Structure formats: C-alpha cells, structure tokens
Length: 220
Image 1 (cartoon, rainbow, N blue to C red):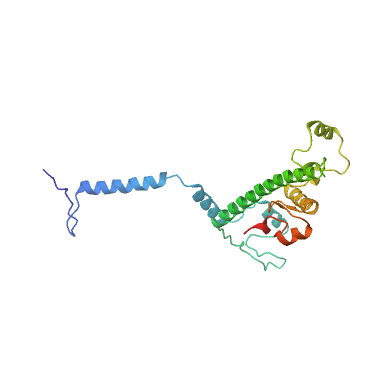
Image 2: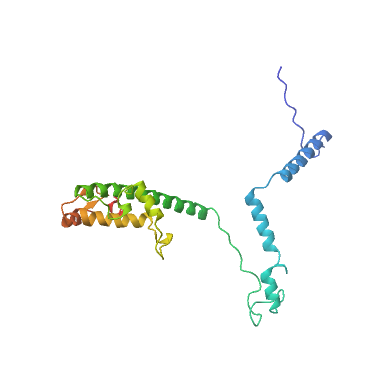
C-alpha cells in the first residue's frame, strides 16, 4: 500500500503546526551554526585582514608615522610644508588571477628556453669535436668546446692551480654565451650550422642557404 506524504496546509489564515515551526527554527539555527563554523579560506582571511587594515588609521607605533610626528605632522593634516597635500592614503587596487597566470607562463617559457639552450650547446660540442678531429685538431680551442674534453688528471691539475688575481666566478660564461661563441666558431672554421645540420662548402654557400645564426632564424 502506497502512502501519500502529508503536505502541511500553508494557506493564509491557517496556523502552522507547532512541530513544523520548531523544525524550521531548528534548521535555520543549524544553517547559521554551520556558516559560523565554516573554515574561511586563505584568500578570505587575507581579504578581511587587508580591508580591516585599510579601514583603520595608522597607529603612532608605526615608524614612518612616528618620524612624521617628530617633524611636526599631526593626524588628519595634509602632507607638505603648507599642509595642503594629500590627507587620505592612495587607494589600493589589487588585481589577482591574471598576473599569476602570466608569471607562470613566463617562468615556463624561460625554463623551456634554458633546456633548449643546453641541448643546442651539447649538440654544438659534439659537432665541434667531430669536425675538429676531421681536420687533425687534437686539442679544443677552449676546454668547453668539446664534450668532456678535460681528462680527470688535467681537471685535478687545474683545480690545484691558484686562480689569477681578478678572476671571479662572475666571469664564467653562461650556457647561452658558450652557445653563441661555439656556433660562431663552427660557422667560421667549418661552415657548419647545428640547426641546419649541414656543413656547407664555403662561406658564400653558408650565407646563401642557411637562414641565420640562431635557433629563432630556423623556426618555420
């Protein structure tokens, strides 16, 4: 047997049952209690804290305010020698969201460019060693022109040698600097472009058929 749910009579002039009134009151109290107990998010707490700080005036404990008072400034007075300057602080307009996304995109693009530079540098070092060897060159122009060009014994000797005066870590070349020097050497000495992957016949052939001396020049 199917039983029908009883719907309270809410027509005007008909009093509600006491039990139903108590249930509604209890539900309202529970909602209010839940709202009070709900933990505020970090953004909500930050916004409330900022709004409270903006609504209150600067206290005399503030170092900047204390310095102004020593110079004769009084609360509520305008800035400037004649007191005709700004009284209220410059309003604060905070924009969130888009700037965070932009910073994230910039960071990712920078990391991608750094990985590409490292990869191009390793490719250039391998090509340089191979092309130099084909010409009978047994020692690289500089230690980092070839991959792992220094043997362990040579590296230890270099570490033991005292650094000349004025040589600091800040003088060390960045991967991008090394890549630019190395690709320039490959183009000048071997007419080779790492992005084309081709050793051209001569300088004229290189200039005529290679798009340029950087990775960006070779982007389609």
